[in-house]
Length: 604
Image 1 (cartoon, one colour):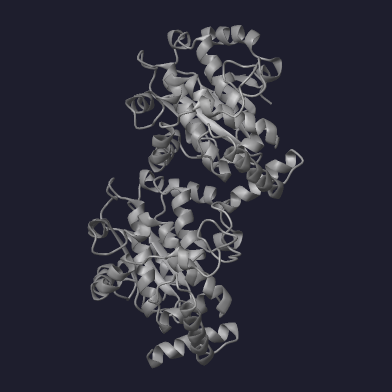
Image 2: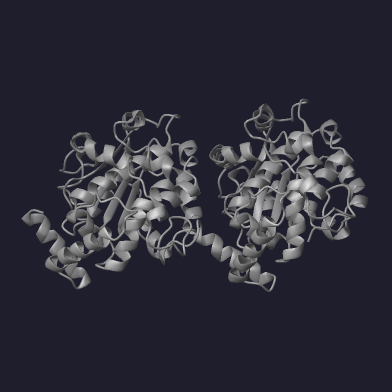
């Protein structure tokens, strides 16, 4: 390392009561430790090891964990890691759309500046957020080897970023970059994120994201109303001329970064070849199944907020998040004794089955069996629900059927239903409603905490002819088979607006088939404004005078989620139950076929 880098490492090390000399000695210890880890490649030089120490406040033990993660996480994020090589076509494609560049010079406080800005008036609809992640990771590889990684400042100019683009960035994507990469591996210290020209939809999304980010981190996000504000927070000699600064332009910074990529092409080719041979690992991995690290205290679950919510829900049923996890293990052990059942429910889904059934393991077992067995009883739904099928696009062109990614404070999931035109097309098929609501349930099972539901149904545009197509058997299959027999869904409320008199009459007829307890939760409102009194304003779509995302934005977000989970739905298509392998005959119920029975709609 040259003298300037030595001086900078020494200055940063003093923040952790260390010195540059001690840092180099600790880097030698890390190299000695790496020699005892036959499963790990030997491609990290002294500079990189010093950065791992700096990033982890001089702790050798934590640095060891993160170095192991650096190699091990690659197989967990193949769509990013093995697609980040700058020579791949999507690198140029991404570069043609936006600037994503860093400054070669650090600030006086030794923070690295990174800038993001759209090159044209608006981002192309072909923009893929994954390419942003890939480029960020490739930039991080260079920083590890050439910079002193004390911390980061990000500047984002979001002019030209459309709502469709924003909604392509899913929570899972954010998790992979922020938690897996920047926290689980790099331990990056984020000094600030400065945003200008922020579209209203992103401001709303930031409010949603706030509930998932630690307050200490969220306080470092700044939304500026004017570009000139950047001159007050970014050194003028480093602020690009594009923002009125005296530094290099974004194009000059991009040219410099591209030259750096070209000089390090051999590095990226070698990174493509990295493989971790787990058979050679000297000790078993413990405590984390996301990255596979030794006692990593930071990353515990895919979604830390989910842990909190599951714990909160479990306590309502005199249980706890810890007890819930223990019961998940019992369910997994039971599933191993059920050779007729496929094994495709992860820990998150099993926790939801427990919550849906008031933390009763035995009832959860029944409902899990039903989850698989019911498919043969409702083939027109189960075998025809894949979002890639033509019905999905046809249904979406007629109506909104969407849910909100954020739960209410009481942990209820909001679902909205509304016609897109003045009247619903005569080609509308109620069975497509059943299919889509089932696909939404599949996503909720794996990504949400399923404590209960609130439905908002806007009946404007729905004619009597459409309503009469909903047969009692259809109602039975959705309400009884799916929502009671499998999901045990708790319906908190159904809010109906714009009800035409004929529909009100049909609802009154249906009263005789619905238990009074449930019927009392169906509310007919005389006007749309009434929704402001029963739905949180920050979650109520702008279509109804709320402050939340519009129905179209929610629709776009749900479609992105479908796309991201396409592999799941393809696997669900293949589910088959081999009843010959069932260890015990089913009894009492010939509709679903589970141990025990139900005869009436039971919804808490």
